[in-house]
Length: 198
Image (cartoon, rainbow, N blue to C red; front, side, top):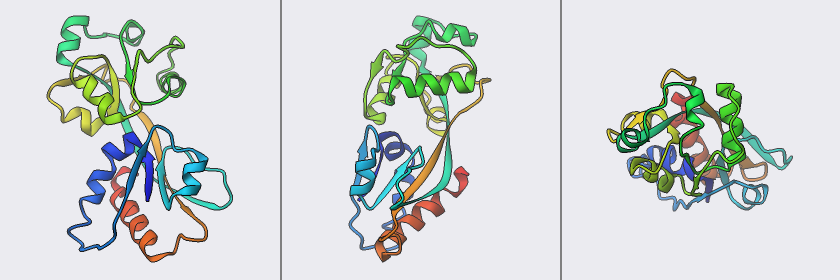
């Protein structure tokens, strides 16, 4: 069982696990996307892939990459609401998010050095893939991996001159099972395939 945030499950893991049929693995792999990878989930599952380092002593964590994200909105939304020309104008727009409001607000403020209101996310969905579809369909501005956003012709990056929003990727396994053959195989595959994200 691999548990991860819905964003990592939607954006990172598919490009990794598409290798499984090619290398002839007979492992039955269950991917469990969740809104938030909690301590309990980390302890209950074989592997977790997440954006923060755990503190439990019975877990081993390795930083395996960095997700670089930007803010995007659909061409239709920007045509109707206008394209923000500077950071202060971002506060006048509608945001769609798959992460808790405080988390996104803190990331925005730390990276862009701009104070945002407490209620920054107006439309929230725990599933990143669904939240991204809402952005593509014109519900508001949302954050996603730059490769996903840049390759979607129905959206445009908002204020592309702003620094990328960055999130670390941590691979977490249990001390007692990290060398189990199937867990080591999947852990190594994830680590190798995220090398370009470091």
